[in-house]
Length: 243
Image (cartoon, rainbow, N blue to C red):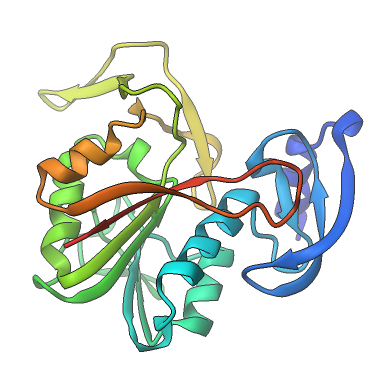
C-alpha cells in the first residue's frame, strides 16, 4: 500500500486533480481519478487500471468475444491487465524478465522469459498481449519474430507502446558489441518490478510500427483506437496483427 501511495504522489499535480464516475472495461461501475493530464496518471479507483490499460482492454473486448476459450500469453505477471486476463481468458501464461534468472526458470512463482529468446514451443498460444514493453526491447524485430513463432495459425498479437503521431520510429539507443550506444539523450520509464524511471527506452515508436510487424510476417497489422471510458479525452491506440 505504501508503494502505491508513493507512486500516486509522484504522479499527482494538484491543479489537474479530478474525479468522476463511470464504467471501467476491466471491472465495471467505478470512479475514475485524474492525477495529471496524461493517460498513465488516470486511474480506475476500483481496479487501479490506467487509461492506457482501459483502452487496451476495450479493444480486447471488442475483437476477442470468445476470450474465455483462448490461451493467452501476457508479457508481464502483475497489474490490472493480468488480473483481468486471469478472470476472463480460458488459460493464461505469464512471465517477466529477470537479469539474474535463467530463461524458462522461476523467481518465486514467476517465470523468466526474454521476448527475444522465448523458451516456448512454436504455435503454443491463441493470443499474445503486451503493454508498454517493446520500447524497452533492444532488438524489437527479434521479439516480434518470437511472438509470431509462438502464436498459433490465426492467432492474434495485441500490444501497446507509447505511440507518436509521426510516421517514423525514432531510435534512441542501440546495443553494439554488448554495450549500450546512446543515439539521443537517455530516456527512462518505470515498471512495477524495477521502480520509477528505471528502465531504458530504446525507441519512440511512430506509426510505422505496423511495417515492422508486416516485415516479420504478421497479417493486416493495424492500429485500433481504444475507448475512453473516462471522458477526459485520453485513449490509446492498440497495435493489432494476426498470424
